[in-house]
Image (cartoon, rainbow, N blue to C red):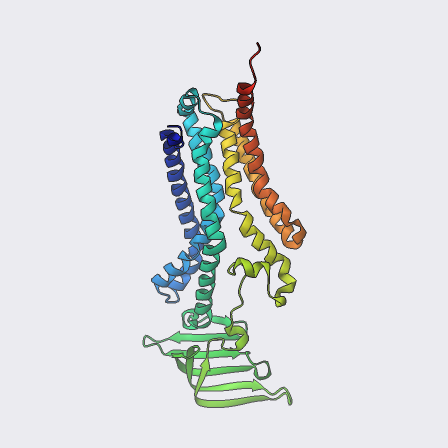
Amino acid sequence: MRSGKLITRLDIYIFRQVLMALVAATGGLTALIWLTQSLRFVDLVVNRGLSFLVFLHLTALLIPSFIAVILPITTFVVIQFIYQRLATDRELTVMRATGLSPWALARPALMVALLTTMLGYGLSLWGVPATLADFRQDQWEIRNRLAAFLLQDGVFTPLSDKLTVYVRARDPDGTLRGILVDDARDPSAHATILAERGRLVDGPNGPRVILLDGSRQQIDHQTGRLNMLTFAQNDIDLADATKDDAERPADMSEVSLGALLHPHPFLERDRSKWIAEAYKRLTTPLTTLSYAMVGLLSTLGGMFRRHGGVLRPLVTVSIMVGLLAVGLAVGTLAARDNNLVILMWLHAVVPGVVCAILLLAPSMRSFGTRLRPSPA
């Protein structure tokens, strides 16, 4: 019978409340962050003709990274809120009266925190790198291969660091009027091209512009003279099709854990940052358990008060703010010196262990008292 009651109705009751609140809080906060971050892409839809479905796909790829960042925080907030509400409604009073220890009351929340930690590892080690890689690839495609979306009438549009295009006007049929192209992709042949009109067409490397009735101006570096060539038609590739630009460099946020721990030799200068990012992925999900233990110690530890209190939650929130600040500082230090990576592990584990010991201490004292033989 005892093994069958390892998970009681009270466990299920608290577990369901914590889990539902966690889903609601994480979902709501993620939606808010997504809304604020997606505003910077609205211009691509409103002014530059990007498909709304492409916009949704592009911004949806950012959602896993949002969830991975806020999961430890929302776990703490939800546990603190649910258990504080149970105390205010006297439900914890009844549960304690039945003989449940603080650890027994904490068990449902720890189950939720453990599930959240596993989800955090899935996102940190696989989900976030995969979606960020797709996001940066799509973003690169829009900038370099779908340059037509970026052209605006009456604006000098830098399609890359070495290619700028100006279009005076655009006819309803797509004809471009008053075109200026500053092309410095070939350092030895920096050219300024003017054309009365033109049209965008698809090319093998991306969009190309067919220029009609124009001129190409280029300075001869040997003689210093300005050479001008007039033309009836000229084609220019607007995509950065050179080898160096066509191969998009990978960012450390989108590569695998193995690639972070063993960065490419040409990244030697940033080696410490890559290794610190690898350990950040390994330690950040563990903070979910630590933050959960902080919330549980706040609501279940120490002297129990039927009517709750305000001071303890405020102190707990202050401690959490301090832990978050320490986490940022430790990550920065570890990125500068990998010998300090141990601090990342300590920050992720020590608060939870300390809170677990403090929460377990009363139960251990009670257990020792029961084992002490009675005087003859």
